[in-house]
Image: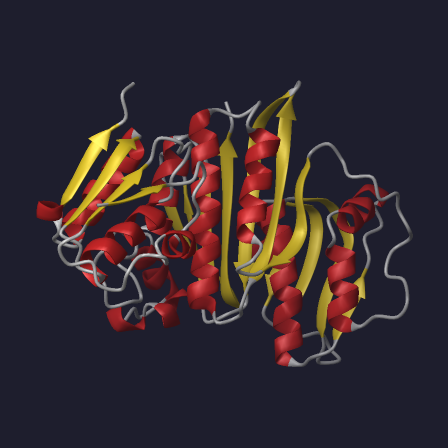
Length: 96
Length: 273
């Protein structure tokens, strides 16, 4: 399991790619955990790029998003549906 | 092309004042003699107009504003510097003004590329975090990133123009206007895989969730989300590309034919309360 903390104000696709660039190119069998606990604001492209890289490009067994604000939850759900990876993503809402 | 500004240059006014023809000498003309007030969307559109004339390799005539406040604004917001650099003017275009920024200035006209967007978005956040609602902060941060990355990924220009202004009510920010533009490929070319027949059809495709210029059904979320957020706050979204413009508010969506200008300009007016 690999844990990463998302920044407070992430940008777009470029920043998502930079955030995950240290991960291996092939993630089969691995679960990636990204903590959204510090996040103040989110962009749709940032969330979609995380889903794209972890699950579609690098084939991770799972992607867990923790402490997710409501808007990011909706964006991640939409992205996972569009990419047909809902079976490999867990989205845990931030406690209010 | 000629841009002859009479009175206040705000919102869609730019599109009414941009004319397709050159002047009698075959040159492009930027006539600001009777300009009275300029907002960020037309300011960025004017920068794109200047870049378009450079691209066309035509001469550009410039008639400066008679109004001292407009002169001051154009200098302060960086337009005169931009024009001087683009056309390598050696003479002073406008009388010198004090360089002190106005309290309402947020981002002066500046060229951005991939390395600048974080700094711009963080600056806007810091400037507005005490006076704007969380909804407005979210919409502005998210929109800046989505539109700027659209320019960087799709325009083919390596960057674009941005400007922003706050409009205050007492000590609070009542509204923020931001505009981002480029003179790149334009939306119709970016959306060619969907075969749009007109620029307006291409703009409407770009505003739809899940439609993008790439072969990926999960893309095409940035501009659609921007429009949804800004309209939800009661703001205004304007998307201009080629010879069309779509203006969206919470209540209505209006398309229009406008004078051709290469590339794309997106303008947002976001209420802060």
